[in-house]
Length: 297
Image (cartoon, rainbow, N blue to C red; front, side, top):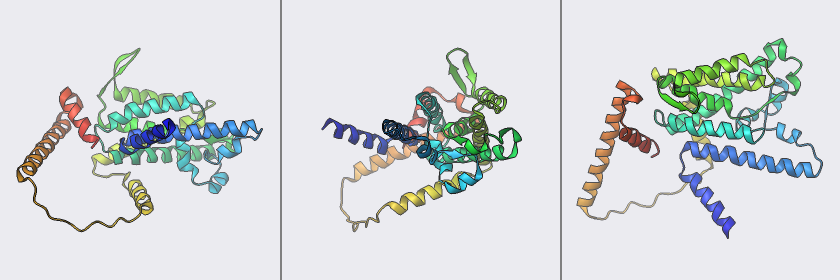
C-alpha cells in the first residue's frame, strides 16, 4: 500500500511539475534503472558495457549509424552518482533561473538542442583531430552536461550581469561563470575526459545560438518542440468533446474572476516591460516572485 502511494505521488508530482522537475525525474529515473540493470547483470557475471553502450553516443560514425537514437538517449545517461548529482544540481539552479526569462518550451527544446550540438561536435572532433584516432573506436559519450551548459550560456547571454552568490567567491556575474566554464573546457580538451569537454563547448554554442537568435526574433528550438508536440499528440487517444451545454450561473462571480485575471495579466505585462527596459536587477523581490509564479502556469 505504501509503495502504491509512493508511486502515485511520484506520478502526480511529475504531471504537475514544471519542465525542470520533469527533466530531473527523467534523468534520475533513467540512472536508477540503468544502475539496477548493471547490478543484476554483474550478479550473473554478464558484462554491462555492451548493453549500456547502446544508449551512449559513440564517437565513431560507423557505430553511430547503427544506433542513431543514441544522439538523444546519451544526454539522459550518467556514469555514477557524482556525475548525475552535479549535473542535476546545475540543471535545477539554472533551469529555475532560465524560466524567469524564457518559457518552459524554450527550456525543453534547448535541453535537446544543447545535447544534440554537443554530441555532433564530439563526433566531428574525434574524426578531424589525429590526437583522438586511437580512442575513436572505443569512445562513448554520456551525460547531461552539454544540455545544462546550453541553458547556463543562454541565461548568461540574456542577463550577463545577473548576480550569482558563490560559497567561496561571493557575488559573481553570470557571464563570468559562463566564461570560466568555457575556458576550462577549452584547456581540458586533451584530458582524459576530452569528449565530455568538447561536448560542453557544443552545448555552449547551442545556448549562445538560441539566445542570440531569440533577440532577432528567431526561435531555433521551434522545430524540436514541434517534433515533440507531434510525437506526444500522436500517442494520445482522440477524446471527443462533449456537446456544449449552456447554463446560467452567477454573473457577478464571473465578472469578478475575469477582472482579477485581467489585473494579474496586466501586472505581469508591466513587469516584463520593466525587465526588457532595465534588466532583471531592477525588479523588486515581489516582482521577481510574481514573474516566477507566472512562469510556472
